[in-house]
Length: 392
Image 1: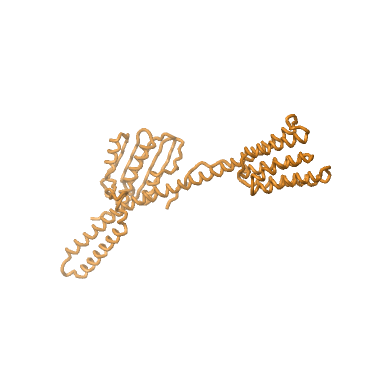
Image 2: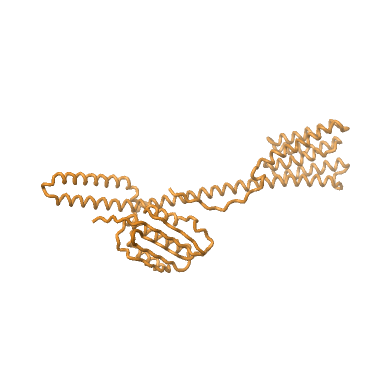
């Protein structure tokens, strides 16, 4: 089965942290651990070493518990700077841990608003208490509160961007899969229509062969007994073949909703097709050669269907007059339709169901289909080989 790739616009390359979503989740704890290690290393030199260690324990517990219980971790991270302020310890380390902890919690899905309000207020109050006030006149307190807000906002924004890119990639993959499914479904539908035509023509030709064999048997002289036996055997084989073919393909002889399909298409009907589309208001400049020549049934049906679909595409997507040329000459049947299109920059290789059907028809008849779009002029040209197989 021919494959027709769906052509969809490529997504722009996301930032590095979008391509590796867990990069920040893995590096942020390292930064927090470095801050805690610095606090542990300096705590023995503090006048209130116990208070400093208690602050570090509370902050570290907030980071660890935040992985399993984010709300509890948020509370402990906010409590760390306050414990430091109450214990008389400089809350710089606890502030840093709470700020990066808020970023990490938002990155893992906790509400950015809650993290910003809780951690920002705690850092602001802790720095203010350390300065001997409630922080309204202390610039360091305002900086601590603002950085906590910024960290929570950054984590929440990156989390939202990651979700957006994941959803966008998923929708793109679904669109590609849906386009491929539609293409394959249209190919199957067109092949089913080809099978309908083949079923009708094959049954007719086998019946004609059987009648010729019966006529030959009747006209044999009485002395040609061996030849008569061979003809009888041949007729029996033809009948068995016809019965088996009808049994296998009987399901194809019913159209949608149980309606029997119409008659087999023929290249002889192309002039009537042109008259119909003209009567519908379509401007067609047709140059149709002599179509009296008999063609193999599959080639004849393919020529009609390709002409029909080419005119349909021109009516749907084109503008102005359509130039149609159909000729049966030499070893091939050629069908060519030329029309202007509304969008000159459109891709001539873009696959639609009509082009899929025409290509399948041409390939099934052993021919080829060429599609070009040159500066707004859309051209469809099919060449189908002709094999002389006319039964008399």
